[in-house]
Image 1 (spheres, one colour):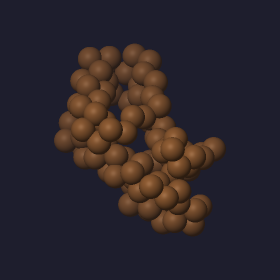
Image 2: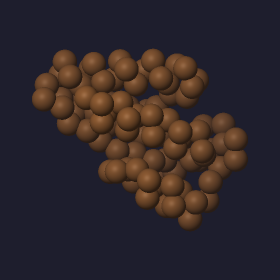
Image 3: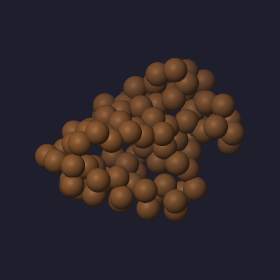
Image 4: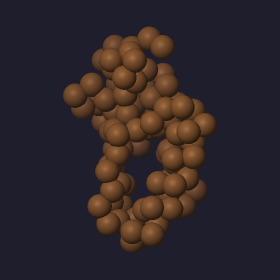
Amino acid sequence: MQKLNTQEIEKELEQLDGWEFVDGAIETSFEFANFRDAFSVMTRIAFECEAQNHHPEWTNVYNSLQIRLNTHDAEGVTEKDFKLAKVIESIILSE
């Protein structure tokens, strides 16, 4: 998969709410009512990550979740990252 340039990344980010391009990756964070809700969403995202064979860098502390996406093989951000980001957004919005 081909690495996107900064202009292409910025254009794609216009379609996502709360995502930013930082140090070679796109990232966002979410807050939930409690740990159970955060972990439940993480589990749903994890199944999608497995289905796409694309795995985020993420951290979870109590009710917060930080997600960072890039394509290691391409050494940058690709369409693969935006595809997963859009699915993550749909999972979050369905909560």
